[in-house]
Image (cartoon, rainbow, N blue to C red):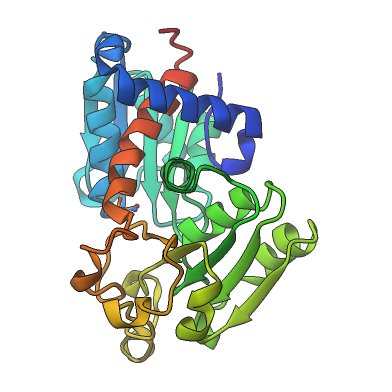
Length: 305
Ligand code: CP
């Protein structure tokens, strides 16, 4: 039995297989309509979510399965002090697979150590978000046709941005990729990600505070939100929240083949005027997330179609 806590637990071959399954689901959805009949997914979300929870639930429904849901910390016995370990053991009695989001880094790993069913990390604090990375990878694959030789700009909150940490880990395994890390000084990529992933693997990267001068060289721009919920101090959040706002005017200097991704939700960092630009891929990314989560559920439940 396998869980998914960190994107690096999937080999490159397994990523290719998940993408192939997602592509087959897109082409032949009818083949998959009953593949998880009588299977149940429990979504345990102790932090707010729109895309991740609903896409997991839509994924399970489209596979013919059923869903049990905890949509907020206050609506489960976690509010009475129940431990993650006991919650995981309990939910294992009712469901076949768990998708868990939690504000504490490592919580889904604790759940996986105590559950008797697969656990998927649906985002743990400022740490990792491997299924968002699966959505990002399918989007890059469909939009750029390759995972190699790309200059990837990541902009915004690189410190607390779990989607950024997981995407860098995933893309650093392919050859020839370079990273441009665009953030305010206070929200720079954590040194453990730089040391353990970029420096250890000899990956080329630059750090800058200037989005506009970085834009022309980029093949992919991954915008992120400055996350109010990760700040201890409201003043710092207010000072940093509008550090970067991508507009149609700024995009005039960008490559014609640039692909703009964002895990969403956005607040102010991409103006709605950008949405009509053919380079904007963030709503395609939302849909790709559902297909990759369908592929992942099939893999972890070991369902053959
Ligand atoms: N991308 C993402 O994790 O969105 P939600 O917080 O809405 O799930």
